[in-house]
Image (tube, rainbow, N blue to C red; front, side, top):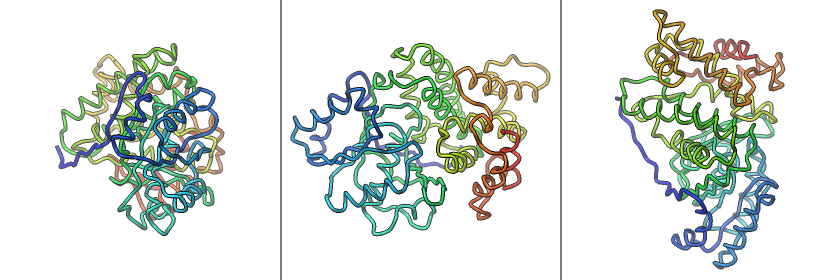
Length: 390
């Protein structure tokens, strides 16, 4: 097991109706003024917006209303919010939504503390050293941003999508009520399932010495998500299925499933360029199209990890041909993605074949890096994976 630091300071309030405790939670932190940050119409249609506003008013907590976050959150929106905060300071940003809203809030939280664009954090020119606290009411089980130290935004001028990790990005608290995800449609539920699984898989299939506790946690999480994901797709109001997905969403990205391993998350890095260039592509859908081909190109580097995945998660029956067992496991997961309504090719997502070369080049930060994963992903291999995924 390699050396690691595990830090998950976010206080989680999990279960039915926990959003009703928002007033008490904010008062426990002595918060008197917040920015209420959210997406578009869904929280208003569901009644959640009105509930939150009433709680804030009843508890005499002042707030600035700032909605309008798109999927694949934009730098321009972040800069707009930072300007508002600098002119009218708040003590906390309350992100109500999924990963896009939370990441937008995180970028504002660190950006409001500096006199330059937070994009400099994303392109590694600056390091975050302070932040406004962020609180979360989660409405979509997917990104794990409610407990993670990561933040991903898209520069809508350059169409680059970049992430940065910092302990300044950890939310102060997260309210997780699985009932708030009942209205999430089949497609977005499927995207969330893929994202949760990929956050776990890309840590599990990584460099490092033996890490049996971490590996068993990862495999157990993957099995639970695979089984409960199907239940949630079939019955959107299955509380136990939704609860499993929501808690897995958090654990998959708060660091727990990567302790003792050095992970790079190459598929995420490539997909960021896809959904950065093609703004209509959901992150989870892009991952579903790319991961099987990355796995086919990578499994011989760590066959023992892939065998455990095939046997224990995908329930492939062992044969004398270990390579076939691994490939059957990869194909089985691809078929699972189809079963939950996910596209499994870039062509299905509307990616143009002539853009693959540029996507591969962008994934290498235009020649400035390679990805030292279980195999080294350079521009040529990134292009091969993109072509095979097309």
